[in-house]
Image (cartoon, rainbow, N blue to C red; front, top):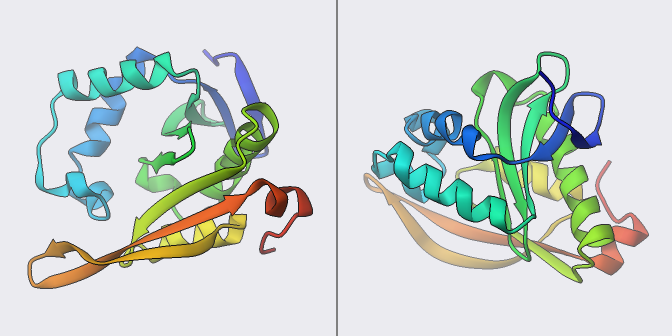
Length: 175
């Protein structure tokens, strides 16, 4: 059964994140392929821990569940505070444009509803897919924490990107 959607696009719809989404999100946080680009990669994360995270996010009124529009499947979540929290956890939906459409809705919410002047995201340097998605949406690289993550003997920078409201409203996004 579809939930009431705040945003509906060609591929996705965004609706309020609910506590019942925690079970699916826990699955993602315990999949090494999903968390390879995240700090949580080293840990097994319990349903209780994720439930607490989801409960906190739902209280902010800025958290969305991302659903595939055609199959009505939860594929990710996002939160629009000054610092975006964005995860497309269902691997079958990677590299197919679901992320950029959902991110576009999140930007609309951040700038047009929440009236943020600036929003920030970050990704580790080996997460080229996320960085490209953010740049395509119009984010610009602003800061680098060098060698912030260590995976075996490989070191990765933490890259911060942001977007100003003035850039969003001018449409300074990649096509």
